[in-house]
Image (cartoon, rainbow, N blue to C red):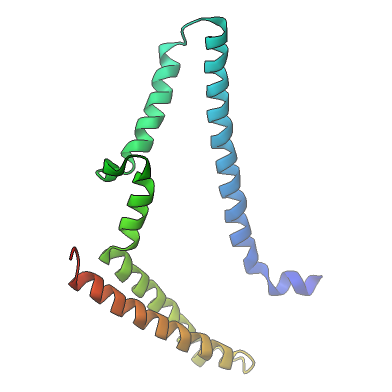
Length: 150
């Protein structure tokens, strides 16, 4: 059991991010559920809800809508459009190529200077694969920059 935690200590970070994301989503869900329940109670009693509550809900919706900027022309598909627009933009392509290249460089350095004979071949194999992937991303970024908007 000690070997498991010694070898896989790095898994604490992705698990922690997953737990934090799930907690954040659950809190957002509870907040919207509580506001909806409050509005439902006012409606069932036949009373007008306080303007502060209505303003808070509207402000939250407007902030959500403003987060997508000028890409609102697709109506209910604006989130998907904004996500895909940035995913296929030259900025995103160059960013992916640079980050993948940096990780490949890290594996090249680790394969040369690790001092561990067991992992040298594995690091070199990962470095070769990531170098090829980075080169592919660089070519895609070059095409995305050259043929942008055509």
